[in-house]
Length: 171
Image (cartoon, rainbow, N blue to C red; front, top):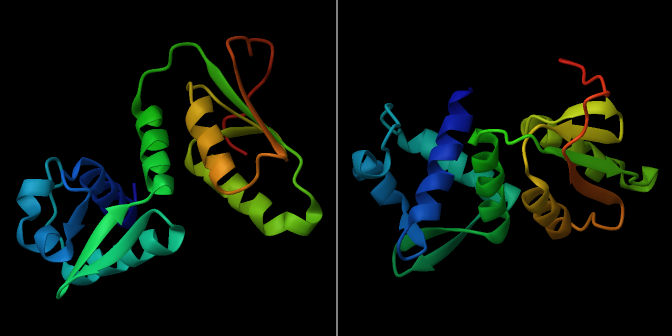
């Protein structure tokens, strides 16, 4: 796992568990050990700032100003991302999530983003527009699809039977 990904995961998890819904950047830096259970590297301010910026640009967090302080809060898209990452960590119970899409060429960039996200979430392609994952993730994927406005072009369902389908290891 890349260093930036670990920092992103750490920040998203901290914001998910924040009692008042937000955390100040100074709290991340000064009190890392309070937040960083299982995170064994000291946080550097530049790395933290860059990661927070990336998360904000992706729409996972919002920033608000409270007097002279900046407060970071998780967005609904960020919550959805955490649920998906947590689903990946859980044990498989025999369900497969299947994502089928037919996104028009005029929306090629969005289609490429969806494919990249499916790869990130450990989906495997059966075809260019049919992807599978051996985790039960339909609800979380559907929430993500709805939030980014792809619902009319994407079908997400779960099945227990993919026994006769060859799923490539790496493509």
